[in-house]
Amino acid sequence: MGSLAVKLAGLKLDNPTILASGIMGSDFHSIKKIAESGAGAVTIKSITKEPRGGHDNPTMVEVEGGFLNAIGYSNMGLENAKYEFQSVKDLQVPAIASVVAEDSQGFAYLAKEMSSVGFSAVEAVLSCPHTPGLGLLAGHGTPEATAEIVSEIKKECPLPVIVKLSPNSLNLGDIANAALEGGADAVNMGNSLGPGMVIDTVCAKPVLSYKVGGMSGKAIKAIAVRCVYDIFEATQGKIPIIGTGGVVSGQDAIEMLMAGASAVGVGTGVYYRGFEVFRKISEELDDYLTTQKLTSLSELVGVAHG
Image: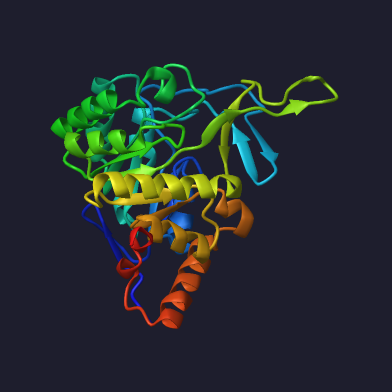
């Protein structure tokens, strides 16, 4: 039996599975449930300074191989989140606060405020493809913006900082290196892909109220694996990577690790395999280590690079 424990940006995880932001992370009860279901760490739903209603319904539609969503960062806002997650330090696994803002000062302020609650790390989301004023639609998906935002956060936040990048970016290596130079402790690769569109052929109009949304789920795994590979190659393995996008099984997780990830984000996998997906992935990883006579997951990280 090999060890599934991993070290990521100063955090110690019993296994490499991390609940991705936006899935079952809207309140403390939900992340507690996921932690008890075997996740190595949990990430809350992204928080903005003020409460947001997000886009009008419908905000999500199932498509072949996954989902298309345009939630629009609906959330309770900073002050309510600080109250809701006041017991987060009592969880048995590391909890990651996810923040999103319009500019570097906004990110730094949110990160500083959330760091006082009891979280183990802060994730800055620079990659949303469908919300005006935030993410890619705010110009955050460039090396320059990434470096500025990360460096401002690091000035104010004592916790490890994870930067969530976009699979839409063609210069991922440059962006990841900018995050590294800005002081990021890890990168999360990544967010939903797109935007894409589904049209209701009866009503003859887009299904989503915002018309377009980001693609997530099994269909984007191959792209996510390639993105992880590119970042590992460009940074020469100098920054830990969370591989997110279509991870549903232990086999999926192994691909991510071999591409260069140290841990894996699990989102729509909860839909496909239930709350127990984290424990199931860990069991499948353990079986793989035993079969291959490996002692730890670290022996798999980046091996696809030769």
